[in-house]
Length: 400
Figure 1 (cartoon, helix red, strand yellow):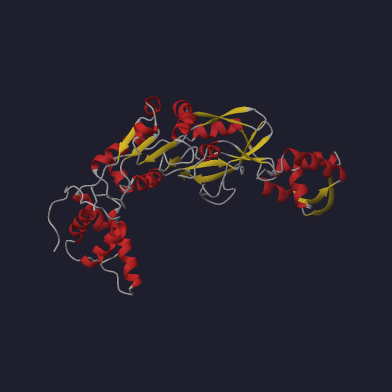
Figure 2: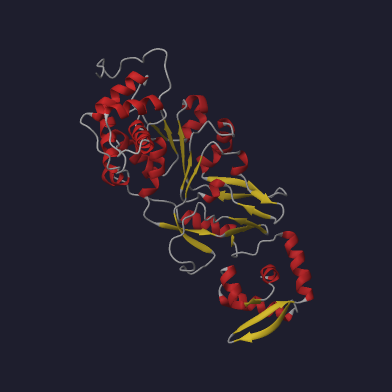
């Protein structure tokens, strides 16, 4: 309250209630105590509210408090309260093949893959998606949040040993409802967190980050993702080596708790109640040892698609984008990909080729439609040149 009054210059009890997310009775009680200590100087009365500033003693106190921290935002919750809230909000989902099909309705997914994903989501344990690139691992991971229909409370900040850790991040937390709609304004009603990190991930993102100027800590990724999902995309291609990450998280994944340290060495425990999704096109055995992989119970291989699924994806893409296509376009595209050197059909090909055709048509100022010459041009743009043809796994017919 003193730091906030220092920052504002002239404050009111009601204004402090709004900015600090505290009940009126709490702010009023502190106001009266500080006034008795001659920390605050009342400048006027507005109805039932007071307008006040800091006295000289108040300014000295504020300066001393700012040496500890500049934080003057919504009041923090205790680390104990945070533990209780996260444990109470552990995700419990009911998933069936039908509900999963609905959640993934904008993808073409086989029953086999659905029946692997279903139990993994029921478990709410970590998930390892692996397989060749371009077959929908990231698309699947991005849609897993659709299985959640509830909301969670996320604190603006948490206090540990007198230090402030900012948890709520409007970049990754999606607020639901109006501010202050719940009883305790220090908590924000949000959708369950969903955070994606890729090649930019560094070791520092998993630890507390202290802003030395303000003496305020920022919560690490796993703390922001509690009660939700954290996707590590392109696992194995981060600045942080896979082995270092796995060693860092081998115990949190097993025991559901993590340990963080303040700058002066105080170590404390936080909950690790999140679903970590590792997505990679690298061989899992080259990324992690058996001890780590054992702690990830759900490992799903996302394989290349067959001709039937490929054609269904093509039909879905053209239908969704309302792009007219000549008959047997999916078949012709499969053969063109074979001739260009593709050794397997990948789920991304129909969407990527249709996108390139749209670019071609925009360049030529023509209406978008899919014809064989357009697909041929798009495939040549898309694939790199091979010196030898690929194994003939899609048939030997050539398109005349």
